[in-house]
Length: 431
Image (cartoon, rainbow, N blue to C red; front, side, top):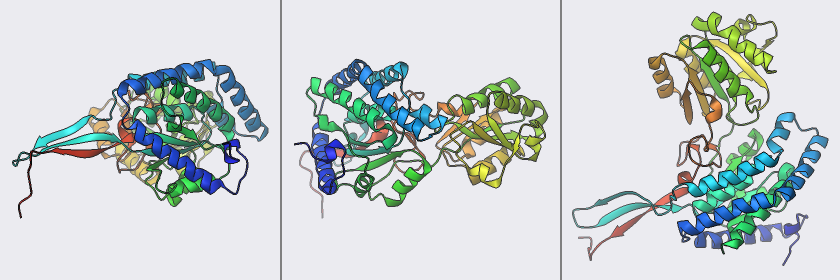
C-alpha cells in the first residue's frame, strides 16, 4: 500500500510509517546476516550494472536537484558536491564493483584460543544490524553506503538531504533493481522518502530499537544535531579542520605540490586542507612558493602578519579563521616554531580528522605522526588521501574522528561487531 510518507507528502502518520520502515529494515538485516558472500557479490554486481543502465534517469533527476540548488544560490563548492555526470555515475558503479572484490568480513575469525578446561573460544565478526545514515548533498553517498552495508551484512536506512532528494531516489531505485535480480530483499536498502525533518528526529531515537548505529555525513549543523540528540551510538566527525605543516626540512617543490593538491583538488570535501602551517626556520625558502601557488590557483589566503609579509595579496586572518572549515577555495596560514609549534596549534584548533607533515627529516616526521592526535596523519602526502577508497577499503561511509569502535575511514570491517563462539564437550563450571 502506498502511504503519504512514501510519496514524500506531509502526514500525521509519519511516526507509524517510520516505525514500519525500521521494522522492515530489521527483518531484512536478519536475512542479510545469513546471506553467502557469493550472493552478496552477485547483488553488488547487479547493482553496479543497474546504475549504468539507469544513468539517463539518474542524471535527469540530478539536473533537477542542481537547478533547484542554483536557484537557491548554493555555493559553487556545494554544487560541485551535488552534481553528477557520466563519469561520476560510472565511478559509483566502479566503487560498488570494488566493494564486491573486497574480502567479506562477516564470519571471519578475529582470534581463537583454547582454555585449559578444553573450551575452544573464537571471536567472530558479525554485522552491526541496521545502520541509519543521515547525509547532505553528495548523492554518491547513496550508492557507497548501500553497497558497503550490503557487503557487511547490514540493512541500511538512508536519509539524504533535500538538496539531493531526487538524485538519491533515482539511485536507490537502481539499487533495488539489482537486489531484486538476485532475490535479496529491497528492504535491505531503504531511503526515507520525505524531506520532513521529523524523520531525522525519529531516526535519532532509534525507531523503537530498530536502528543500531547512526552515521551522519554533512556539515557542522547536521553532525552537531546528531551527536546532541542521538539515542543510539554514532560514528561521526563534527568538522574536517585539516592541516598541512611545511617543516624547515621540506622539499620546496613537494611542499608546493602537496599543499596545492590538499587544498584545491576538491576544496569542498572533508579531507581538504583548511590551515597551512609554515615553519619559521624555513619560511623564506618555502613560504613564497607555497603561498604564491595557492594564490595563483585562485585560493584566498588568510594569514598572520608573517604570512602577509610574503605576498601583498594575503588577507589578514582573524582568531576565528584557525577554527573554520571553509569547504571552499580559502585557506588560513600561520607561521609556527617548528614541529612542536605545529603540534600545539593542531591540538588547540584541530578537529582530530587529518593532518599532513611535509619534511625530509624522518625524525621530525616520526614525532609528528606519533604525537598528533588525529584519525589520519600523513607524511609527504596530500590530506585528500583521507578516503576509504584510497586506503584500499573500496569505499567508506565517512571518516570517524571518535575513539570508540571506529576511527578513520568507516569501511567494511568498521561496519561489523563481533561475538564469541564457544565450543565445548560437556564442560560445567565448578562451584
